[in-house]
Every structure is written in C-alpha cells, then in structure tokens.
Image (cartoon, rainbow, N blue to C red; front, top):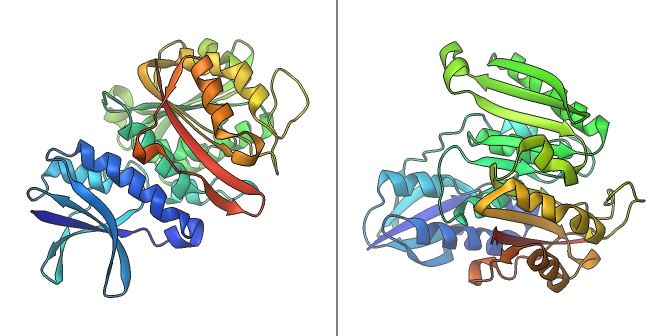
Length: 334
C-alpha cells in the first residue's frame, strides 16, 4: 500500500476558505477512480501542522497516475508518505502555457482561475471516453478565463460572448500575450453567420504551427446559435459560469437582463446539447439563490441531459461572498 500526499495550491485558502476542502476532495475522488490502480480512502490530513490531501493506492503510482494527479486543479506538489517522511514525486504538468495566461487579465466580476480549473478537471474526469486534445466550449465566455485555462492544458478552446467589448478584449489580450511570449501564431478575423469571430492557431515552433497547432476561437454572438458557429457534436465539454445576477445578469433572446439564468437556459440548452458529442459533459456553475438546484436539474433533464448524482457531485455549493452562494452541476449528454 502506498499513500500519495498532495500539497494544495497556496491560493486555495485565499479563494475558497473552507469550501476548498469539499471541492478538491470531490475532484480527487474522481481522479482516484480513474487511476491505473484505483485509489481509495481519499481524505484531508494534517502533517507537521500543514494541510494536505491524501489517497491510498495498492502500489506506487505509474507515470499515467502521476499525470492524472498532477492535473488536479489544486495540486501544488506530490509526495509519497514513507513513515513520518515525505518523498517528492514528479509533478507532470505538461501545460502549454503558464498560469500567468489567465492570471494577468484583471476585471470586475472575473471568475477565479482556480475555480475554473476545478470545473474543467471535474468535467474531464466525468467523461466516459477521453482523448487528447479535449475540445471545450464556453457558451458564456465573458473575457475568456475558461478559454485561457483550457488553452493552458493544451486543449482546443472556443467561446461565445454576446457583448462586443469583452469578446474583443479577449482576442486583443490573447494576441498580445502570444506576441510578447514569442509564440508562432495566426489570427483569422471573419464573420460566422454575421457574428464577428477571432480564430487563433498557435504553436511554439513553425513546424508545429503548420501540422498540429493549438486553437482558440472567440465568437461575438448569440449563444443559442452556437451550433451554427461551430457545427454539431464538435465538443467534448461545454462549460459555463452563468451570470450571478449581481454584477452581471442573464440575457436571452434580446430580453432585458434578469437575475435568474432560467430564461437563458431555456433558450440555449438545446443549442449547447447540439454542440456536444454523445457522451460529452455539460458543466455549469451559478448563483444558487437565483435558481434552486432542483429547478436547475429539471431544466437539464428536460433538455436531454443526465445530471450526475454520485457522491463526488453532491454538496458542491459554497459561499463566494455575501450575495453569492455558488453551486455547480455536471451532466452527460444522453
């Protein structure tokens, strides 16, 4: 029996406080079940007065296990527990970009990058079949935090944003970042069914740009038209942090802004389902006081999704501030 111990990201406590524990344990539980030799007894532990997370494995982790563990959103360092000592294990990040890609850009109402990273990993671990690179669509992209976090992982990222300013700002920022970091890249600006579109291809080397480039696409348009912009069955994951109804409201079909995302979901869920491949995962977070979880799950079932309800997906609501109690739901396209 081998015990793998994980030192959490130093930003965890500053962002989620006590909520970080249940979120990370949910993610680690899904990861443990996917290891080559599945782990068990996922838990929080204190060693020398410092908080760690731990999982027991029947043998020492293989490279594939380390890749899975290293990709956890809150993993800062990995160790094997040997008696009272910790032996470091290699952290196999294999990230295309550094954390600065999503961290540099600051704006009011920005979703925290660590939470976005957690959402992406929970969604990826929920896929029945996973192949690289994963293709991710954010249908409420804002200024691109989800797109940048997905690009960091080497995944194909696409987003739809209704408002011109944040969509344009996302494209401008990403282009400047690629230029400053000296990435080889191309940018095609076009219109897809009348919607302004910025389509990036990028790579470290010229040969890779021609043969296997990364891709990030931003469309300024109506999320209900996403299948027209990208095609049907294209994405493995559709992931959105819905407007909380505090600084940002929801808009559907040209209507006035609303605190609740109900109208937005009613208008867009069929389109988001069309964008997903069979077995793909829809992941949504929202401000729970604006829409009860039971109502959210009813909307999802009515649109052809199957909400996941095993223990790692339960009790995910957590306080962000005095006016936001954020919850998250993960479901599979039936």
